[in-house]
Picture 1 (cartoon, rainbow, N blue to C red):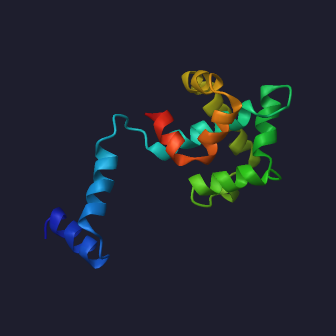
Picture 2 (spheres, helix red, strand yellow):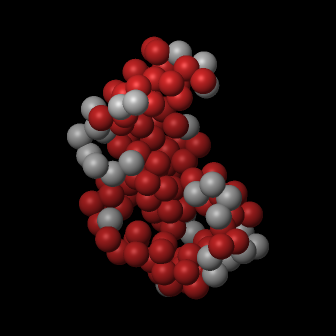
Length: 134
């Protein structure tokens, strides 16, 4: 059986609706970017969270964000990464967030231009985030 036959057999076994599968495929293959939207959404979430931290130094803001006592960060991380928060140390979380902060200057600039209310919407409303990413 060829690959397309295997795919159709699998989709039939899951009772997938052709319209839903087509929409999913279009969402993946019509993107201009090769980066998955959920990765961009995670970057936005981290940048907005760091912009709103009150610590004085950037490293302090990042440590405050990734602290295991910060339940909102743990919950967000688990949502975006399929319950993998505990598979990394706090130092690994710190390094990952620091890399996001340092390597996304254009994203930071775009987010800084938004009002705090719009920044909050980016984190809480997927429709706003989709429009922002476009």
